[in-house]
Length: 145
Image (cartoon, rainbow, N blue to C red; front, top):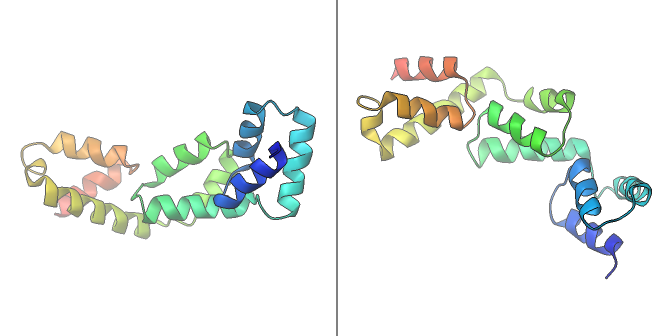
C-alpha cells in the first residue's frame, strides 16, 4: 500500500486538520510539494475539511470530554489551527452554555470528592481550571453552591 492510500484511509477514519495531515506526511518523508498537492486533492474529495474538523473537535471535546473553552483552544492550537480558526470555533460556546457545562462538571466532581468544597477548595479550583474553565466562572459557580 502506498502513502496516498494510507493517508486517505487515515483521513477516512476520523476528522483531521490540514496540519495533522501534513505532519503525518512529513513523518513518512513525503516531499513537501507532493504532500501539499495531495492535501489539496484530499480537500477536493472532502476527506479533509478544516471547518468540519473545527466543528467536530469543539463539539466532541465540549460535550463528550467535558472540556472548557480554554482547553479546547489549546487542543486546537496543538492540532495546528490558527488563532482566527480557534476563535471562530469557540464562538459557538456561549457563556450560558459554558456555565451550564461548568456546573455539570462541578456537581460531578463534588459527588466523587464531596470534601473538596469545604476542606480542599484550592484542589477543586485547580481541577476545574485544568478542565479549561476560567477562574472567574469557577469562583462564581462555587459561590452559588
